[in-house]
Amino acid sequence: MQRYRTFWPILSVFVVSLIVRITYNLTAANGYFPKYDARLYEIIANSLIGPQHCFCLFSRIPTTSRAPLWPWIIAAIYSVMGPENIYPRLFLCVLGSGTCVLIYLLARELFSPRIALVTGLLAAVYVGMFLYDGWLFSESLYTFLSTALVYALFRLQRCLISSAKISGSKWSVFSELRRWQLVCGALVGLASLTRPNGPVLYGILLIWGGILLVCRLSSWQIMLRSLLIIICVSLVFILPWTYRNYYSAHESTLVATGMGEVLAGAYNDTVVVGNPETGPGYWVSRDKVVPALPEAQKKPHHDSYGYTAENEKQDVALAIHWMRTHVSELPALIGWHFIHMWQPYTLEPGLPIKEFPDRLASQIVWYLLYIMSIPVFLLAFAGLIATLRSRWVLLLPIYLMLGSTIAVNLALYANMRFRAPIEPLLVLLVGGLLWRCSQMRKAST
Image 1 (tube, one colour):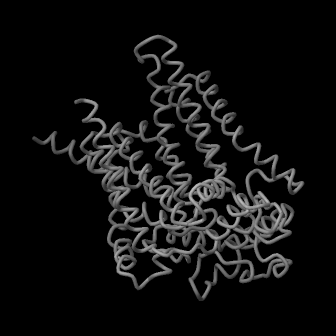
Image 2 (tube, one colour):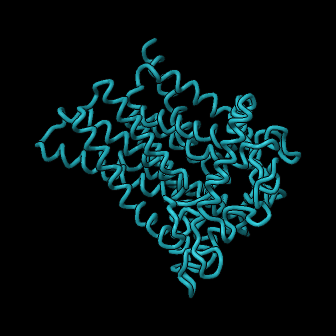
Image 3 (tube, one colour):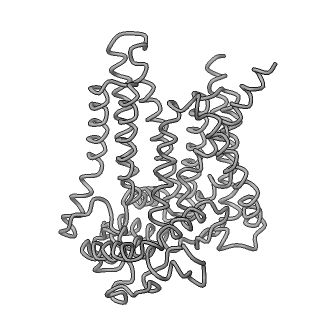
């Protein structure tokens, strides 16, 4: 009976989440055709399972322009189920439902089972958490991995803090610590292979460890050992791909190129003045950058044949030069990044709701974006304040993931899509507000 009571809320959250996501894919996203980045992932996947068996965008020419994990997953699905994009999207439905379950598990351990169920069901229906499960971008995969990392860090932190109080032999303490160290390392490695900026997660680990040491919540020997194990395990995943990049392109690229183009498109005169199509603060493609980039016509983007790590360095240098010569423009530009990050709508092309805007399901999703997003943001902020004093240690991994994602978006460029990794954490903070309100109600009665 106890096992049933523990299991049925998890199953309920998963089933509701899965129904919402499958319904979205079969209505608003019905007939979806991959475009833009999604199309590139599919091209690479087809090259992997095709006669050339190559991680290529162009015939038999290996590319380093894309992180490998998502194309490899698509290729694996296509090799089993056939080259229909509905199958990877159904995989994302399962993955997104798993993200909702992780939020339920976090809320259950942080707050209470009842609050956890409400929080998990909110995650299941919150549009910001299922919007990306209907296209072939890597957002849903990265969101799942980053949320799983937060949960694993939470469990590892709890082991570190209360290791002396864990019942049983020393071996049980050692095995639980080691288990979560290995899980954290694997998740950091997989997340780094999903997005080129995934290695930012190393910064989260170091700050997290430093805070626990300063607050004397862990011994430095155990913390140092934990960080070394996590980093070494993650490098087991990353370094083989780094070697492959060096072997293929004869240049050192940790995961993928692209950061130079991101910076060059985010810091230029066009972004400050405002692109007529989007307004100020939005990233622009290379052909719209003012002053014009060298060889912009020869290499229009980092996915082009012949774009190298040296081109990447040139783009980074140009962006840094622009920042140094336009220091007075930077505060306003970063302010625009912050505003765009919290907009409830998206200008992202290729989304099913943008491809099929006349469908009733697409219109419902659009309305939900406006109806649900702002209240969730406000309630999450209130939850952050409400839980800060009593739960800050337990919520430390959540705070660090929120802060790092916001910082990266401010530094690079932001829109709704780049907010995706913290959408589950915002829902979790809403649960924190509900928990705090319930505590205050109990105290007053």
